Length: 68
Image 1 (spheres, rainbow, N blue to C red):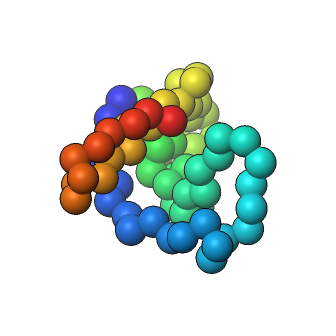
Image 2 (image 1 turned 45 degrees about the horizontal axis):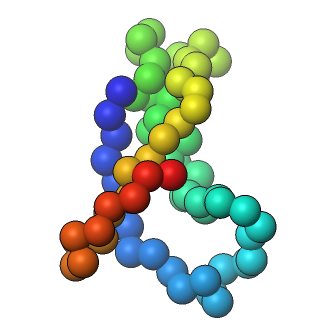
């Protein structure tokens, strides 16, 4: 499954502090991931996400890439 989303990140001082390695994603991302993983036409009640979900996070300006 592949999904791409481009977003400008906010400074850590703008969002609440989270302990550990966490990403705050917009709520619609879950719907998009469910839609991408669903084999039956958008039946979210039956869709299951792969586990674990891994993300590739990149900075086009510095060309640095990490995974989360």
